[in-house]
Length: 180
Image 1 (spheres, helix red, strand yellow):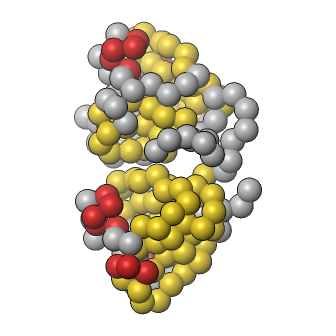
Image 2: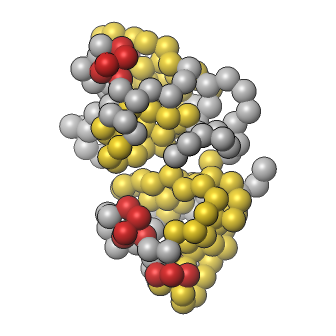
């Protein structure tokens, strides 16, 4: 299934627009700014900085008339990544410490509190073996989000968080029927 997202310069789908159906590392080459968007199909992660950096927010089919109200971060969306539809098993190994150290647990479903379920004070590295995931800085799928696709992540910087102090407390699988 292909994705399609339309970005608008102004709030409430006003101003110039740009239609996208793949990853876009720099929206400023198409629009001066982006303050609203409409996802017509598929799923996307949007970022408030170019090159898939900064604060992230998961979007699925729907209308998002005001970026700041929706996410409360910087002034506009600067890049986006289309999330492929994953059919099949989800699997990730999470580690308490950087470089795959400390406690390790294998995860195959959503987890609303890593600390409560696995008795791990924090998660600082992981290996995503199957599926695509959204990680959250707080329990109950709250706070800042980070998109992880299959691969090894030795620390939070490799997961896309510029802040070494960032820790993840909950995680959710990205699938067509996931409740976000």
